Structure formats: structure tokens, C-alpha cells
Amino acid sequence: MASNVGIYGLGKAVPGRVLTNKDLESLVDTSDQWITTRTGIKQRYIAEPETAASDLGYAAALQALADAKVPAAEIDLIIVATTTPDMPFPATACIIQDRLNARNAAAFDVSAACSGFMYGIEIGQAMMALGYKRVLVIGVDVISRLIDYEDRSTCVLFGDGAGAVVLGPVKPEYGFVASEIGADGSGAMLLHVPAGGSRIPAQIASIEAKQHYVRMYGREVYKFAVRIVCESAERVLNKAGITADAVRWFVPHQANVRIIEAAAQRLGIEPGRVYINVDRYGNTSAASVPIALAELAEAGLAEEGALILLVGFGAGLTWGSAVLRWGGYSK
Image 1 (tube, one colour):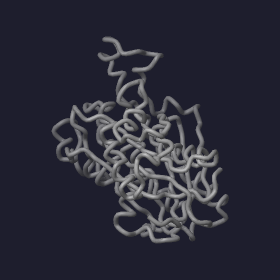
Image 2 (spheres, rainbow, N blue to C red):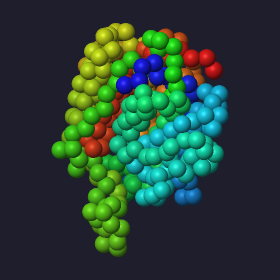
Image 3 (cartoon, rainbow, N blue to C red):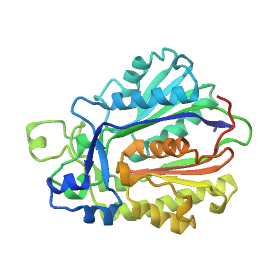
């Protein structure tokens, strides 16, 4: 793994339309109290019909490049983590590369659902070890396209958005200290979209059967999430040679406030060191961790030298964690 790889700049983008819990009350048999109690979510952003993943990803990328003060021509590689690409091919990363005019960048997509950004970070570090100097990692999902708004078990959870970071070399002892990614395919069917691929291509029967929407076994996913967040976090903390007490900020995937709170409690991280924004965004899938990290930086809460623990988990089943020492570069 490349040493001394850090984050130069961050960006985020969400659609303009806000869907509140009150709005959902008119769509399904639910209530603001029911949603808030079980998930902590109060609202989420939903893309307009004409908005695609590349639109949100491009907007977040522009912010990240501006924040990093790095021109698009200096980007060597663009990695887009998404499960809702504009189309099966070409890669959404290639569409964004063209819009950015990042002519010197290779570009590809990564599909690891809500863990996608953490996978992108791991791959970005590995590619920098091979000689790439500046890597743009984007997490973006227009997950509302895969949601059945008659299914209250899923429609209350998800929102659309994008987050982006520019990776580059930083001073010794800064940047990513330790990281890992992992998967357990035996749980693949616990959270999946049955149709739309080569197994069940789009057809009238699959559409009528609502097989193009997210299907989730919530109880099993919850148990997996709490367990894997703790196990993966503990492994990267051990790799980094630190304990949870040394972590200034815990920035987990924003899926459900109960998962976040349960994991933080098990890790021994008090609420004041946990960054939570799921109440305002819902679960934005691959965009979740970078949006939260961008907000943390925007608020001035990420101080130079602070240790930040990032954890993602999602369909696959997949997961990824990283310990990051913030700063170490000059813009």
C-alpha cells in the first residue's frame, strides 16, 4: 500500500428536491415518528428525473478539485463508486472525465454498494503505489431510481447524493495510516436488486414483478452491520497501532442512527466524537462517507493531525475501514 497518501480536497453535491418524513406519510403507511424512532432520518434529497449519477458526481468533483487547488489536467485516475451508473456502459467515470476535461486520467467504476467509496479509497492508494500522483475518488448514487415508494421498509431509508475527494502525497506520518476492505458473498441476497443484469434482464415480466427495486432483509442486515463495523474498525485500529481513544472523529456510513450508535458504543467512542448527518440525508449509499467527511471539513472540525476513523458497509455483503491522520499538505 502506498505510504503517505492523504486527502487534498473534498466536495459534495445533492439534488434540490427534499423529501421529508411528512411527505412520505402521503405515499405509504408510515409516520414521522415511526421513521425517526427506527432510523434517525428526518429528510432525504431526491434527484429530479433528468438528473443522473454523472451530474451529481461531476458537481462534487468540481468542488473537490477547487478545494484541493488541483486542475483537472493533473488528475491521473478517476474512480467512481456507484451502483446506479448512468448506463451499463460506458463507465460513469468516463462520462465525468470528459465533462471535467481530465484528459490525462484513466477512469473506471467500482460497484460495492454502500462500501464503494471505501473500496475506491483502497484502490486509489494502491494505484498511487504504482506511480499515479493524483487520484479523484467519487462516491455517487441516485438510489431513488431503485426504490419502490410503496414499500415502507426501504423507501424511508434512502436518498441521493455525491461526495468526492482528491488523493495525493502528504508529509510523513500524515494521510491513511491503515485500511482494509472485505466481503462476504454468502449474504449477497440479504440486500439486492434482482433484475436489470444478465441474470434477469429488463422485460415486461420483471417490471411488473417490481424486480428492479431494492429488496432488503432488514433484521439480518442490521446484525451484520453492527458486527462488521466493530470488527473491521478494530482491525484497522490494530494495524495503525492505536486504540479507539486516540480517534478524534468516527465517520461511519450513514445508514441508520441505531447502527451507528450501537457500533460506537461497542467501540467505546462517545457520542461527541461520532459524526452523524443521516437525519438530513438518509442513506446515500456510496456517497454517504464522503459527504459526511466533506461536511466535517467544511465545519472546521477536522483539525490538522486529527485521527479520523472511516467505516463503510453495504450490499455484497461488503465493508471497508480506514484510519486517516488529517492534513499534511499545502494547498
